[in-house]
Image (cartoon, rainbow over all chains, first blue to last red; front, side):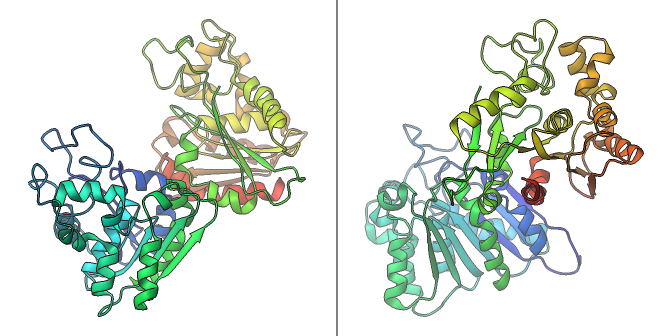
Length: 252
Length: 252
């Protein structure tokens, strides 16, 4: 597994660095955020380390969608542990993000015990589900245009039925709306979500809004912001990443 | 010729937009700056239009370096009018940037009469030479890690001997150091130049410094800044583009 890391200028080598895990969206590798989001300028100022993993296992021996579809298989790991053939041997992205990668990072770098986590689209789904399932491991979570209710949108249904099988009950462990209902009653993690209103997936994939509805319903305190004129691209991420990093810096 | 344009939110449709021409470096197309520099966020705030041309003519019928070298031919137009075979029919990038593209822009958009111009590396060379040769057309110029003395560095000598022939006298029209000596005595254009000190081309291609030496010698008022730890990449551009845009906004 390849991943990118941005290390800010070290002021005090004895101090543990605050770290943010960034999870990218469909089709991305570990390079999209690094090259396109312009986050390093702000991370340098705030002294935050950025950890940017890939979005799926990679290699010639890794199963892919039969038609090489962009929304299943390579580049589309959905940050879950697959249980179904032919996926389950390699598509264990949840364990990779929650356990394996942090173990490696903690071995190689001096980082704080609690991290921030954020992501875009499929990566927003990853960040939200992982944070809501591991509220003691993360200090804060943020997302751009996240898939929040995969059980009720085309991307999620396709991925989850392939990776997890047809029992919708098994999907809830990876559904932000379901997780917020379950976990959000007992614990709370600071949350910021941005959504562009000219995002062509906003309605078709039911991004963001269903989670805000749950938050309002159960009284979960989170900030949801909607932006006129912004689409689903990395230009949207680049426009607001500074505010996300400053949000996380307050909690890291 | 393909180019990218960023149009900021229009506040007053009757007002002419301030525009900045961005010239990219070797190997780039019209997409590198657009995707990697994170300039739109700031351009939106300042209300500046960004015009991002390609770095050479393109197409199967366009001559390229025999060995497809990155520093001659496609992606390496050097913003000059070639006089030599096989280049001169198509490699007329100086005329394209100074006349043809602005004519098209002025026809399609409502922009101010004077523009700003900026660029990176070969594009920094383009911005500086074009601004110094057309001080009434541009209000300000800035550059990141520019080639400033092509007559005295490997990139410039290779390109100019191919495009312009071997008479070094003919090269001076496209040499920032020579132009500043000639023009800078009579006219002045506000100038900002940033240079990374971990840039592996800083010494080998004699970037930036020779122009500062001329500026000091003739008393040309310009700001030259040197940054420890920054290299030649677009990460360097992304780190300081906001300051460049704010510099140009003062003059536009």
